Amino acid sequence: MSAAAAARWPSVTTVVATRGRPVLLRRALASIAGQDYPGAMEIIVVFDQTTIDALEDLRPLVPEAVRLRCVANARTPGLAGARNTGIDLSTSDLVAFCDDDDEWLPQKLTRQVELRRSHPGAVVLATGIRITTDRGSRVRTPPEVTHRADLLRSRVSEIHPSALVFDRAALTTLDGPVDEALPASYGEDYDLLLRIATQGEIASVPEALVVVHWDRPSFFAGKWAGMANGLTYLLAKHPGLRTENRNAARMTGQIAFARAAEGDRGAARRWALQALRHRWREPRAWMAFAIGCGLVRPAFVVRSLNYWGKGI
Image (cartoon, rainbow, N blue to C red; front, side):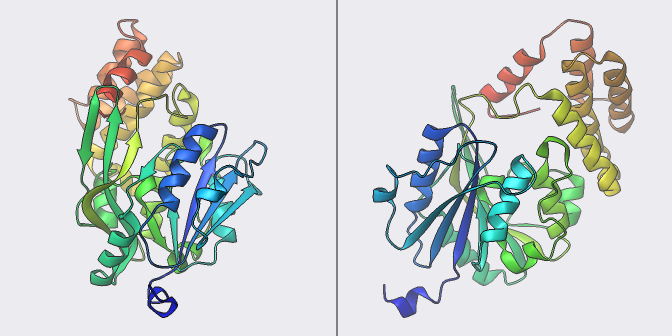
């Protein structure tokens, strides 16, 4: 493709925040560098609370047209600060995220930018995902268009952070843009979507173009206090999340589960009762009671759910 033809495609910066997963990181970066995207591409790898790896062994495999930069997190330690560091350094038209343990299929970016042309009001682009577990894989396909009202009613978990591509102009007008005050950076993607969706819609390619690996422990696995504090923060920051009973029950139930898992039975009971007031059948609330009574272990519940491609 000629330089003039390539210039008709928006430039894309992909931000990859990483810490302590060098083998998985290389797999993720190889999938990003292997895109069939005809426009200009840049990858910024942000090393959070760890020594910078220059990735010299990977560079011969990265096409010359793809710029690869390795930097240290210059902001608040954690995922939010690392992503903001990459956003600060980006100069492209679009900014993408990819978790360091996930993979992109080669046509992902091309398909998303093609979709953008038919959705000029979109400020975020996503795709479907394929979740891989020890048992096999599950495909999750998001709605073609998602608005903020949809996000207040549901997390829309089919929209995964590793699939997201943002309009950089919309992203950088946000205060943050990723909220570094969010405890443990838990739910930072949900918060970001809720805020940027005030500027436009989220359009999704109805194909599984991202592979999400749940065949190994999550970075957040067992970090119950961070999960509970992050969700509590989100409910306070976005009061609209309590207006739809099912979503409010889900979030308060998640907090109840996390508090029970960390051994705070009093807090778990209070949050579980909140969840049941929103929806008496909320399973997370009943699981919190079961954990508090010693009937089941939280790790067993999480492993069982992940086995089937689901989460708490």
